[in-house]
Image 1 (cartoon, rainbow, N blue to C red):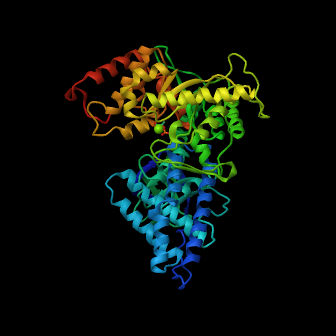
Image 2: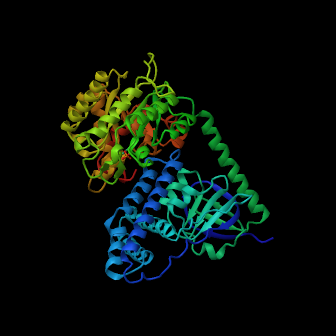
Image 3: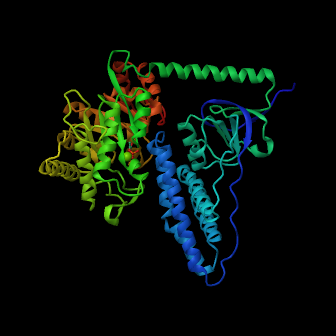
Length: 572
Ligand code: PEP
Ligand code: MG
């Protein structure tokens, strides 16, 4: 038998997959009928109804996938929800219907193509990745206009390796993971959103394999290595055996990690580093526990809100926070107040039909004009901190039970902290006045805006702990990275140093906390807690176990004081 045909793409999600190919159908083409004269209003209404169906479809994805979505991944769908409100997409299509007499389908396709072209022309890769989000959103609305379901796997009696021209983020979330061994796509790259999702779902994926859909036929046996990007079609028996052996040794490595996940992460010189989990929905708390998390280091409540159609009330929030606290008990739980500004807009309907839109730079702050929303959330946290039973009734917590902490995001100055603490005190007073049992909470700040680093000494006096949001900190720190270490790490070092002097705990909850290259540096700076996506907890613990904090501290010191020529490049 001759050896299989070899192709090389880009490794997009690590892991080895081997099995029969399934060729993913192309998304259906839109109807091209031009709206009959006089039906513009009808077409605009059809478009707006279809956009509403698409919006609900995206919310459903977040609800279903909540268990596994990290903040970054949920953000992909948040951005898609935003696109549905973007005047450049649906708004532009409506305009084209009115002025050009186009059908809803044609107008939307045209507006989508224009938006995608603008995004593809941006040199920044993360903006280019959004072009496929536009295609995803447009495809959903077109499906809704045609009243047809989107592409999906047929019911198969055996698992397959999906081969596609392109897979969109919502395709990945909808895949039946019992039936999919891995993915091979013609388009895409390791940074595309579909690849980000494949990594988090543990689906091996190779992207950018030219002409994959022509070269591979349905049912062909395909072997793919999601780390190296290697793909073999029709491997001979010896090759197939070799691929299976590689697959088995990787599986063994991962099982070893899982078996140690529930043990504490202790450095080689005896310092315990807490490895907590970042979650966005209550269901993820169980995943965090199963992966050995030492607590919840960040509950992104806006992700939970985003999956709802109306604003969750105080009682419902209390039940949800109580569920997370009970699940993790006696481990600490950090609940972050709504972080819905900037690129994360939240459009929900409050009780009584009032529309609440949290968007724009200051929306994460209690003083944003939505005090009532923050007050209800803080009351719910305080009630949940008293210990909430499954029946939703609050009791008095026993000593030693879960410590509940509230975390305020996007703090930029002292006034933000003063306003946030005043609101917390008001929430407590309101509960006391109502005679409602409440607990005590520790108060912390996200340090993720550069000005907060400059004010760190002052801010630390006001709170019990700080947590570094390195995702936003890196995004908001302008300029090229310095050598020998990125500027954002210098900011982290300044905060860790100030926290040590103030005797207050410091955590890191941005993606940096899961980067094996950064972990020794963070541990060396005295960071006591790393909070990461639930599935990454076992791996992060394992990395911590290889670090000597004393040696890491001197390495960090050396890097921070080194001159560029001594320290190497700025990407380490
Ligand atoms: C961060 O900015 O690093 C962070 C953890 O917050 P989010 O990713 O939710 O903005
Ligand atoms: Mg942030």
